[in-house]
Image 1 (tube, one colour):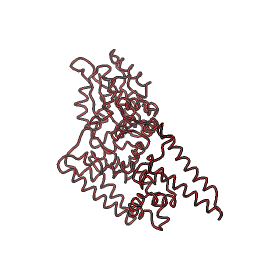
Image 2 (cartoon, helix red, strand yellow):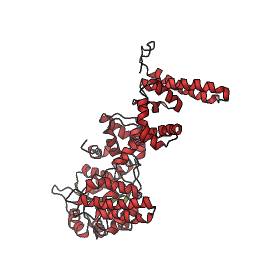
Image 3 (cartoon, helix red, strand yellow):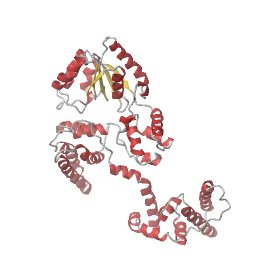
Image 4 (cartoon, rainbow, N blue to C red):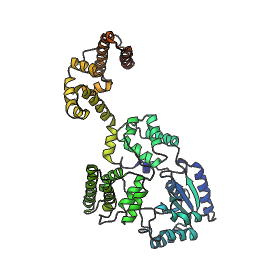
Amino acid sequence: MSLLWPDKFFPKDLGEFIGNKDIVESVRNWGEQWEEDKQGKPLLFFGATGSGKTCLALLIAEYFNWQLFEMNASDKRTKDIIEKVAGAAAQGSSFSGKKRLILLDEVDGLHGNSDRGGVAAINKILKASKNPVILTANDVYSNQKMLPFRSSCQMIQFKKINYLTIAKKLRELLEQEKIEFDSEAVKELAQNCAGDFRSALLDAQTLSISGKIDIDAVKSLGYRERQQDVFKTMGEILKGNSVEEIRQVRFKADIDSRMLFNWIEENIPRHFTKGNDNAAAFERLSKADIFNGRIMRRQHYGFLRYSSEIMTSGVALSRENDYGGWIQYQFPSFLRKLGSSKGLRNLKKGLGLKIGNEMHSSSKAVISQDLPFFQIAFQKKENAVAMSAGLDLTLEEIAFLLGTKPTTKKPKAVFNEAQELRAKELVEKRKHGFDERELETVTKRKGVVQEQEAKNKPVGEENHQQTSLF
């Protein structure tokens, strides 16, 4: 599990590339022209995150046996560096005599301060290169710096990968890894990734650690920000070199302040690993949290301007060391835990409301103080039946109070007897204007549970008497 699935299952050749199949043939023809010494225009791949832009560039280099020269967003891309390194690579061939593929990744991420002069230097290479060049970007229209690239390159748009295609590929990989899964859960996972196959792989790997991938597991992943890739946003904030640069990233990201705070808190230890940078970053973050507390206590949202600035620019600029290369950011773990425990919390809330209504108490007080006593009381069968009938508990609620699963015999037996007791009490009330529809509801509930028991009963046990459960 140490190897990330996007790396482990990286396509071995062009045949394994999924989505945007029409683009593959077009790019291969472009490469064949270069092989015949017919220089074509540089290519500008643009489109949604995770749609395969960088992947296809790497596969093309391998297909034609070209030496790959890559510069991405983690590298400094000033005018001098690009001209000295990428410019030299664009002019000559490799030692074997083969061509080089110049891959300039995420060119829409060039910044005015850290990458000063980079746009002009790249545009110069596009016009003079004697080797094939591919640029990648997410958005080529809203950024004015992309204008010269649009005119110098052949633009190829990558569309989001169809979720059915992603689901099919995920099922193949899960079968290959011998991981149990529900087809509908994998389908929902593919829909949730919004065409980003890379994030779908990461989500599937995360869920596979816990075992079978089912609907509940998929829902436990929580909300994934898609408008502005939150992983990219984290990198741009924590690697930022000025307040203005970081502020622009924050404004561009479509993610609320509280969620961004959680992301930064989770990933500070993963990003700041040198010297005292980790402690300094958390010290700044704690100051931002003080302002968040004042916002809640005083309902004065003017403090948000301070907390937002401190938790982003303050944290990023507290470092004493530079951090390059790729960093594996993670979704906030406590939010994932909240998502995975949502079903249990809802069950407790329902119990709290039912018990609190009878005890004239708040549901919070019942959950925090009274539920343990009800669990003790439920150990006696007569108590369990009487309270289940009086509170009209569901099978799941009874199972929780008994400390077992709804599929076992104990909660089913208690549930059936409780429904019989409720039915008798409701029949007695008929004389006083009882609504027969309520009796019908009780009878149906009991019938459903008995039907499930009959289906799950092993062959040959039809005539066996049920043993004592208490």
